[in-house]
Image (cartoon, rainbow, N blue to C red; front, top):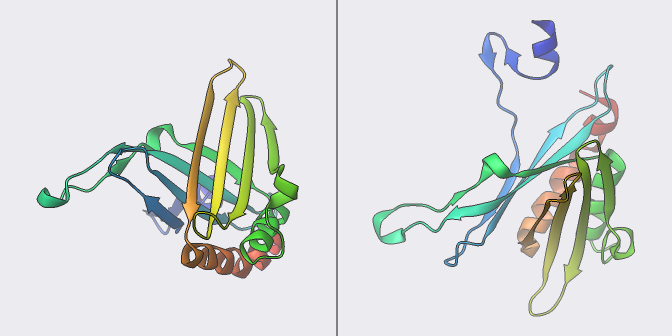
Length: 172
């Protein structure tokens, strides 16, 4: 049972809820995107990280009937960002850099394949930040998704990530 508590699965007999900063951008074409950022603090046994999940829009919805768009979280792309990578994202969102790692982004490799995460400040046609995640499996299957953060969303994300740095690096 202590292993489940360490993983955050059970707290005082109840499943725990891990809060996330989530952004949903559905559109009428059905090709929108959602992104969720979850903070996982450092522990004695593991380094802290930010879990980034991105999902493609699944259904369009119907505002007349109060049916909301849905996203395909079952086929989401999941990646983990180190505290230093989270800091690089904050620097970009705060205008210190125009992109992460001069536009090259982060490269992650695992037994299942490789991922590339990029974040770029865009000024045309309007000011926003583009976060793009592409993943290629060992079998050669490619998936890519992107989301555009408004300045307000970028500000909220930057504040949240910056405020979590002590927990990411040193734990609770």
